[in-house]
Every structure is written in C-alpha cells, then in structure tokens.
Length: 134
Image 1: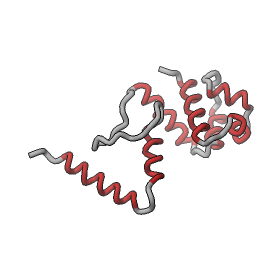
Image 2: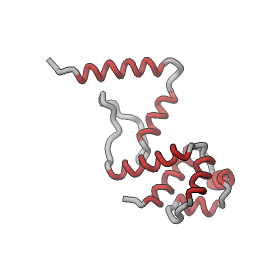
Image 3: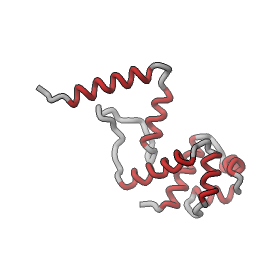
Image 4: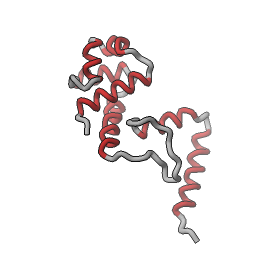
C-alpha cells in the first residue's frame, strides 16, 4: 500500500491532469515552485497544510473535497473493488479513480430535470430488487 505522501502526489497529479494544467500553471496558481509541485506529485515531498490548501484552491477544489479524494484513494487501495451500483451497472472509471469522481462525471452529463427521472427509476429498480422473488 502506498504511503500518504505518495497518495497526495497521485491525487494532485490526477486532478491537475484532469484540468489540463501543466505543472508550471498549477505551481503559479498555488504560489509554489514547479520543482516543488513535481516533487509532491512524485511522492518525494510532504506538503504542509498551507501548501495543500493552496494546491486545492489552485485546482478549484474545496480543501474538504481535496482531502476526500485522498481518503477515497486510500480506501480504494485497501479494498480494491469493481465500482458497481445496487442494480449491477458498472460505472465508467479509470484505475485509481475515486467512485465519487465517476459518479460526478455521469451526473454532470445529465440535463436539467433528468436527475429526478434517474432517481425515480433507480428507486423503482431498487424496490423491485429488494422485493422477494416469487
């Protein structure tokens, strides 16, 4: 299992790449050097809480969301599993991607009003699955 320093680096790199930012751009936004960001991403440096907050802000993430991404990364390492819903639908995800990110991407693809329809349909399917089979 990777240590926390490596996980911070992995999450930072993934989030930076998801936003199509270069190391230099992230470093400028966070107010730290490119070398330092590179060292963090490679798991060679352990950023202070202040730097972690700066990186989260530069990635346009709330610090709580950034920390949650790290927590999900730790959980996925402890319990590697297929990301599936209660109805057996496999969520599209990339290796190491937190479940929350995959679900967020799917939700972002939905148009206005679609979310309620999806929720109602999901509730219907769950109720059918929970009902004892005759």
